[in-house]
Length: 193
Image 1 (cartoon, rainbow, N blue to C red):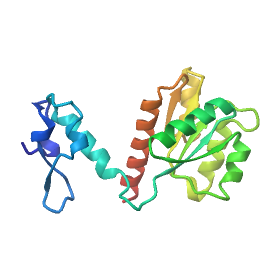
Image 2 (spheres, rainbow, N blue to C red; image 1 turned 120 degrees about the vertical axis):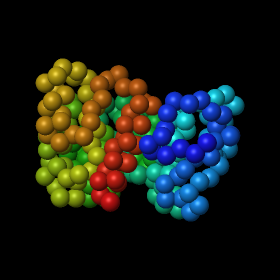
Image 3 (cartoon, rainbow, N blue to C red; image 1 turned 90 degrees about the vertical axis):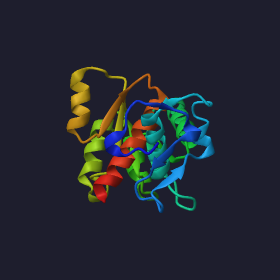
Image 4 (cartoon, rainbow, N blue to C red; image 1 turned 60 degrees about the vertical axis):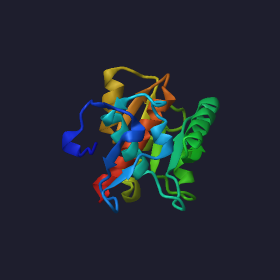
């Protein structure tokens, strides 16, 4: 089966039997890698799911390239540590800061590819930090995801108004958070090309 962007459907196929067109590939097609073939444990999967996994693979940095650097900003030390461990486990490089002021100071030593910022912090809240970051040319378009315990529409709208690309409410599903950050990084790369 050959699939393209226009003809992906929900057909069920065995991953190990699929030949998927990979845009930008040398020969235009390749066999599904073994680890992707094992996605459904030999069971049929929707072509769309396989295409999505291949897209994630294609967008992942190649060997020798550095993984994206995420700056996690949260004043809750245990939550911050959890986020660091989760994102490192997902293959990201991670820096952490316990306040908005500490985050700004950390920018002197690192250049993050994405930010995960808690909205409510004592020193400088996430809204103020986001405004400061968006005022800097270097970080005007860097993906920023606001994490908040506030789930009212006003707080969400405020997050987006100050420049956050996305938001997540606590308690956070870490797997979804990782995928959101990956999506934001991918969209940012696409916009820069």
